[in-house]
Length: 211
Image 1 (tube, rainbow, N blue to C red):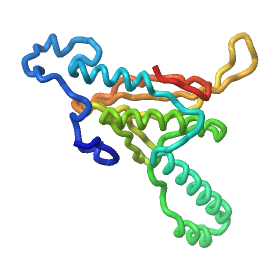
Image 2 (image 1 turned 90 degrees about the vertical axis):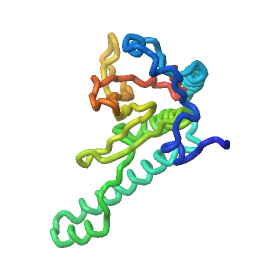
Image 3 (image 1 turned 30 degrees about the horizontal axis):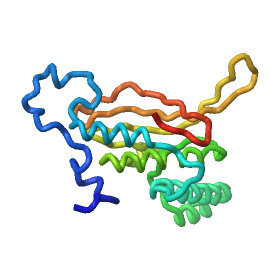
Image 4 (image 1 turned 135 degrees about the vertical axis):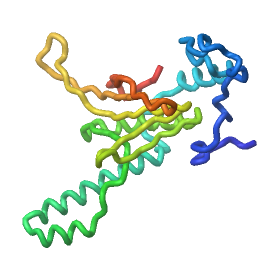
């Protein structure tokens, strides 16, 4: 069989991620073991560890995922629309005419960073998104009460995420530094319980390797 690619990856399962065949024979105690990836076959564990070890952002954004491209295009569209609406705000009639020429927001990746950091975020997310797809996962975007929302979906679990900036003072200095933060909120498909939010600071180097 040929390798599964593209949109098919959202519908076809167990061609890469393979679970143990003896799960039904395991006791509750064995199922609750904290051993990493304990429900997966040995070859799948090896594959996942190797794949994660090799994830690395590139110095330049090449072959961007369609979600990256769509984010760029939507941001430009929103800026153009909002500028036109701002210019027409003094006339209610003109405002309604201008508004009718534009659509509402379409869902894109939840990225809230300054323009100087957005390309670095693109490179990091591009690496993560492609790696997830190689492991039978995918990235989903949506609008939640009008706000952009995203989720990494893999192995029956959905991790809502967003990327923001945080500014803090440097140690023993009055200067400040800006860090990119990836917020993850794990949410199980099975029990619909949302776990505590986890924060991961992204390294400020252009070459960022996920370990």
